Length: 335
Image (cartoon, rainbow, N blue to C red; front, side):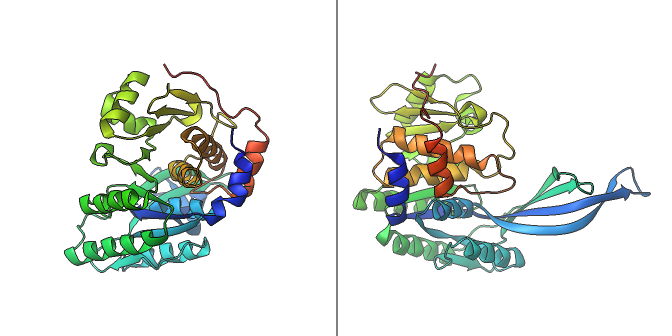
């Protein structure tokens, strides 16, 4: 097997990854339960702190940066307060905004997670409130976004398409990304919440189990997944399966089960898929095989689910995790 630690430390920092997709403001509203309301049988939450973190494609970019790579993020945020907060958060995590557009008629998609608890007790998520962009991008914004993708990709070693169905990924976005990847011979990796079949002929994709079930039904088999990979024209399909690990379906090779790393009881799975695609893509951009890149992604995902909120894995954490696990792969055939 390739020396994964050497690749992470010495090659990841030389790789540039373009992430094009839907930018989300992940907000965490922390509060203390003070008392029960006299107006209704509900708790009164006294607000303590609201934190805004990059979510969606923005979180994938943060993870590329934290793993040592150089992210170039392409997307759209609204000309609103949450757009300002999201851009501030990106700059805090060393992700530039030179390829991000501000849409005057666009609402920054914001997901507010309310975390409540009593004094000196752990905060628990009690509800999530989503403010989604329901408008469409103007012809002018679409044209500018395509120009920004072309400009960012001039120095790219890989491209991630991160589709959360909020408008930034439209047919021309993917067509351009696919043409660039073929022309420059760089990996194109897809993550799509609802429409994986709309993105054929990329190099690979990283759907989770729920997303695969939408396409194949709850009782899908390894044979079904291999057929899906072939139908979509991917060289490999990496399916994340929560605390059961991952399944890798690669052209010309038998399916591979990859055992989960770390605890089987995650602290928080928010944004874990963004971590996985960031690590997987950096691995492929660095010349790793699909198996080794999936191994790296598996460790990164195992790290981030043990952190609260929308989090990222660092290169030092990744090197330590790989060093502490001599047999990170369970080389068994998927059933």
